[in-house]
Amino acid sequence: MLWRFRREVIFIVCIAISVVIVRHHYVRKVDGIENIRKEESQIINYEELIAENIRLKEILDIKKDISSLKKTVIGQVVSIKPYVFPVEIVINKGREDGIKENMTVLSKDMFLIGRVVSVDRDSASVMTIFNKKSKISVVIGSTRDIGILEGGNIPFLFVRYIPYDSYVQIGDNVLTSGYSDFYPKGIKVGEITKIERSSDTLFLKIYVKPFSCISDIEEVVIGE
Image 1 (cartoon, one colour):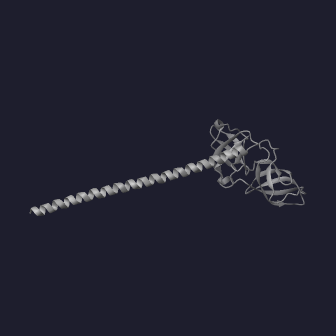
Image 2 (cartoon, helix red, strand yellow; image 1 turned 30 degrees about the vertical axis):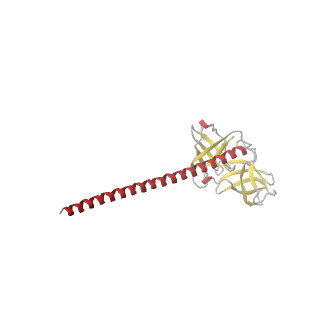
Image 3 (tube, one colour; image 1 turned 180 degrees about the vertical axis):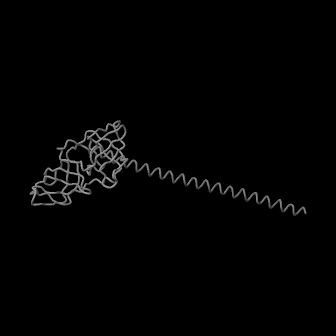
């Protein structure tokens, strides 16, 4: 009887020791998982910091390259209307950031997006080059012919008033001429993709594909 009692006591003690060992192993395992998670989180944070530093460097390089603009502000796009070939975007910079109406808006690659048309305290609306109200004096890169760039013909823009006998060609670049009231000279707008000639008019009808991909844009440069 006594030996039976001792066996039961030994059995209970073994179970208790096993529980302690398993619990200790589990705690170490949990601690190990938490450490791995912390290390993974640190890696993710480092990657985010690296990406942020690269983005900031790009912005600083952009500011160095802007010679025609006296003042520049970097803003983020918070709204696009409509999403495909938008005629209007809203940015997160406004009056408190020094934004004013008619300031030029560019992509971070220095391609023309449009101009500011209304300003609130901490936001502003931008009319893009796709808007049918947009009319900009432009110059053809190869021939130096001056024309008017018009929106409202998605997915292309039109350049009008280029003479019928012009030597303009497909693939030529279109830039701002500097003769508009709002846009400085020399900003790249797009590339000529199609030229139509008609005998009943003195001018060519020129199709332009914009360089800026406005639908996917996240940051812009606002300047004057």
